[in-house]
Image (cartoon, rainbow, N blue to C red; front, side):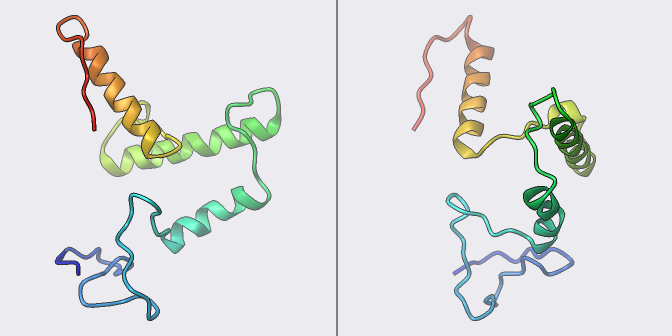
Length: 118
């Protein structure tokens, strides 16, 4: 049971005292995160026809994909008041955690030589 009382103004993720389409409320976002329908609508064209590797800079598919990723980075940065260069997209939690741990380790390296994680 969720005791959270914070609800976005549009009600998309209102979870207090409700269920979604007769199903239990899913709270295991470490495994899979429910996708907001607006995000799906925005992503669908790039998953079905305008796909390309944004790291491939030798053809138009890569250029178009890189532009879309850069636009998304700018939008996220604007939303949270950050600079676009501060936004890093990763493949998931493991890569994100490793990046954070390695960053802390590198920062403290001259003084500390051990990192312990669980």
